[in-house]
Image 1 (cartoon, helix red, strand yellow):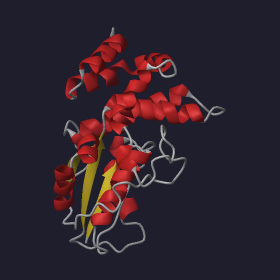
Image 2 (cartoon, one colour):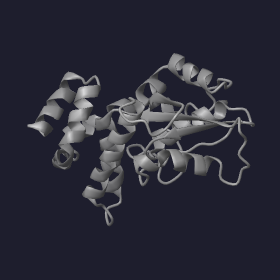
Image 3 (tube, helix red, strand yellow):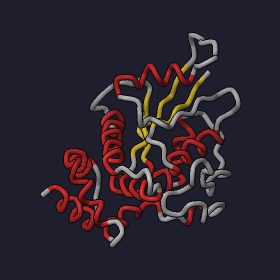
Length: 225
């Protein structure tokens, strides 16, 4: 049996990716993990195995396929700050900042700079959102049957999208998920740039490994100087 795992910090968009992939799988394939905020990298392989196979009898030919989901860091950060800002009484910026270390750890594992998990693939969130060809390539990896039945679904767990709540339910393709970072350029989002400065190393890693627009470069340089 093949078990498919999506490793990412839990956000509505990341949960949607997992749901899309799961919709392609036949019933004999299972396993879907996406909440890795509290798990340190050295625990990943054991925890993936334990959670996927919990309550199941392990077979020698069982196979776990892991997707390390990587998203543009500024979009990731904006989503978390926006979400936590809505939790007005419990909002703790520094708790959000700690999640940026998880983002970097997942990216390093995805790019094979670390090697805690075997049989893994890098899953680029932006490409998954924008490209049917890319989604079909992922579907091929899991030997799935491609469908877009969940393409416009906004996960209903928690409070929906940090930015849009459930406003785009059944029309998820209209959500501007690749430009969440522009929130930092607004009056509401600009103060949180100071929080990004607490993780300059993560921002530098982002600059070194991702293609940034000119305005993203300017924002990164503002943080790093």
